[in-house]
Every structure is written in structure tokens, then in C-alpha cells.
Amino acid sequence: MSKVYFTREITPEAIVRLYDALGVELPGKVAVKVHSGEVGNQNFLRPDFMKPMVSKVQGTIVECNTAYEGKRNTTAAHWETMKLHGWTEIADVDILDEDGDFELPVHGGKCIDKNFVGSHMKNYDSLLVLSHFKGHPMGGFGGALKNISIGLASAHGKAYIHGAGKPEEMWTADHDSFLASMADASKTIVEYFGKKIAFVNVMKNMSVDCDCCAVAEDPAIGDIGILASLDPVALDQACLDLVYASDDPGKPHLLERIESRNGAYTVEVAEEIGVGSRKYELVEL
Image 1: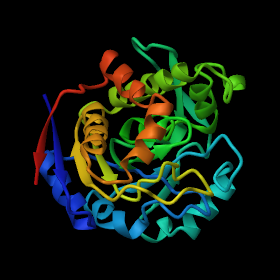
Image 2 (image 1 turned 135 degrees about the horizontal axis):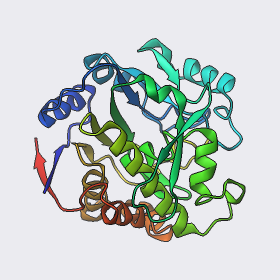
Image 3 (image 1 turned 180 degrees about the horizontal axis):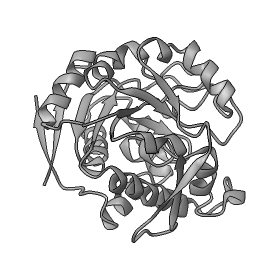
């Protein structure tokens, strides 16, 4: 079973402790995937919260452009947002698809047979994925799997995943096919980096809306903690289980979003195609 480390302490130092517990050394040049936060969003995790972890691995903050209107849909606009939100003050920043993308094959996927990621990803030896676990208007929730699939896809790649292989059907594709396509895309990233990848999910500011929403609902459920694993499937499953196990009165609000969008299906497909395991051992620190 995969190990998932968990702490109820939600501090920058706690992220570093969980990372240390994983016992992994990320070699070479480390890309650190975060969510830059759409301009206007109040819930995204701020750079200062991530800074000690990014500094520990001497990482470069990486992001990709979006495929919808907003302040991150072009490289120029995304750079402005990165500066506005303070990411450029804590580390070097790289918009991975600033110079286009390249294709990764999906081996044994369910819906798509390729994934398009930012071309700059070739410049990195390892990957640290710092994800904000919360709801999502389409995916039901966003965690590690979404952060390495949609999150690392180029703008074109995002449309390709959303459209389950047909970018022109980005907003009209079969919903479960979109969810399965995220799982497919996540497999390409796990295969690309091999053992040189680690994941942290922060269960804080858990709105039903993603950090990609300029106008997002305030969270109804209270903060739960921070989790880390080398297995993104186990990590996302553990987060879902903690939401279900919570006695917070705001829990139904988040669960309605997750369940109405069939959010757990992405995790189920990811296990089915070999990205990781939904069976895990939770180690509380």
C-alpha cells in the first residue's frame, strides 16, 4: 500500500516536514508545480506559504497558460499575474508553454492517446507538485491528479483533455470522458518523471470553486490539514476520505460539488490504468 503522510498543522514548516517524511531526494533541476491563482480569486495558496518548500528543493515555480478567458490565457498576461500575486518574489518562474508544447504518449489510457505539455518541461529533471485541494466547477475537485494533468498541459493540451481528444469540443464533450482524460494525462507525467516526483496536497480554503475562478465562493468547510505522498492516486483518495470523515457542518456543500460532477471517477480511472493505488496507509505526524 502507498503511504500518505498527514498532519493537521497547516504551516509552511509542516509542508517541509511532510516532504522530509517521504524520504525522497529530487535530483537535478526541480520544477515546482503550483496554481498561480486567477486574478480576483481569494482562496489560492499564497507564495509565502509555499516559499520554504520551494527554497528547500531550490525549485523553479512552473505553470502553463489557460485555455479560457482570464488573466492567465496568454504568456504576457500570465507573467503579469505571476508578478501581481508575488510568485516571482520567492523563486524563479517558468511558464512552461511560453514557447509551445510537445507530445507525450498515453500508454494504456482510457480516452486519449497523447498529452500536450509545455515545451520547457524538457528542461527539468524532477517535479514537486504542490496542490491546493478544493472543489472545482467541472472536475468536482482539484488535487494532485488535476494539477499534473490539466495543470501541466499547454493551453492546447488543456483544450485537448477537456474535449477528450477533440479540442473543438472543450466545453461540450462527454463529462466522464473528460474526467477519464485527466487520469490518462496524469499517467504521462508520472511515467515521464518516474521516481523523481513527489506530491503535497494542502486541505485549506476548500471552496467548491477552483483557484482558476476569478469569482469564487468562500469555503463552507473548515481546514483539515496537509498530506504528502509519492502516489498521487493514494493522495487524492486520502483527501476525499478525510472530507467524508469530517464532522464539519460545511461538509455537505463541498461533497455536493464533488458528487454532482462525479469527481471520484478521475481517481478510479487513474487507479485502473496504473497511475497509482487507492489503497493507502495514512501516517499521521
